[in-house]
Length: 128
Image 1 (cartoon, rainbow, N blue to C red):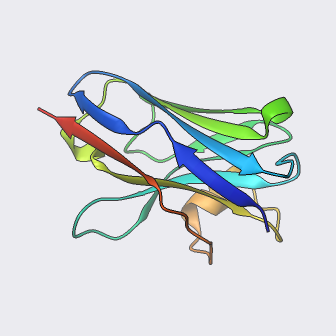
Image 2 (cartoon, helix red, strand yellow; image 1 turned 60 degrees about the vertical axis):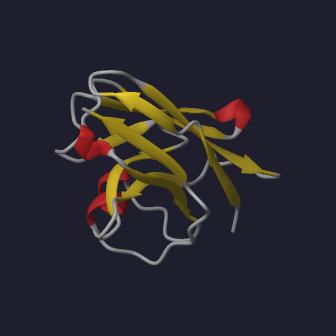
């Protein structure tokens, strides 16, 4: 199991951009699949985007496709989420997490419910 730390959240206006970072402490992410999830007030946590770190293969949910870009820097053991053209409905706490045992595809991690560990997340607020 690897400890992940999210950062980069903040408050923006609709149409603006933010970049979130997910950094691993004391470990490489090369062999794992990492996902960004979010939870809005009163709603269940949902997948946003996932990526297989070694191959860099991404998956996006329909809600963010075309607006968000997930990427990774293997040398820094970090995964990023570039969020463009943001909408008020993107307001949520954003979490990153990893699958440390089953090595799923990015699509599987984002679409099939799984048991993951969650950190504190980073708050993103988009005002209209």
